[in-house]
Amino acid sequence: MKRSVLTRYRVMAYVTAVMLLVLCVSMVFKYGFDKGADVTFVISQVHGLLYIIYLIFAFDLGAKAKWPVGKLLWVLLSGTIPLVAFFVERRITREVEPLVQDRVPAEAKARA
Image (cartoon, rainbow, N blue to C red; front, side, top):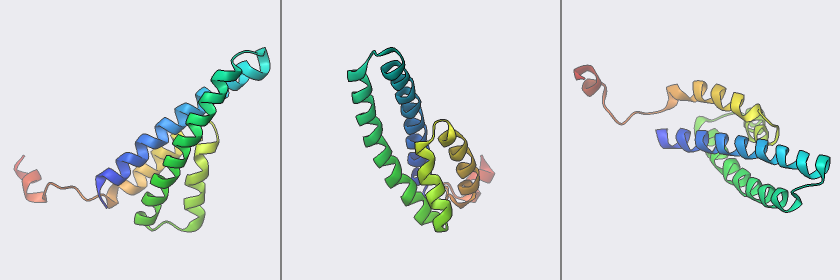
């Protein structure tokens, strides 16, 4: 598997998680203080779009890593629960890192 598959998953996991936290804060302001309804709407739309991109990249990573369906669903749903995506991303990165093929041959690494 190429490193770019893991990298784009990691980037989207972080972006989705941060946007979900921003959405939660904006919802507190909207429903708790009756402020920022328009901002909350925009943030929710952006998060939804980013979550769809996250789903595509996570599914691609899961297919290439040959995950079972249960694990794939766990990773896909992690983008819907605040803070969980940060922990899942870290765990998945540790598990997938050995599967990543580096472009630099082992001989070049030994010389460096």
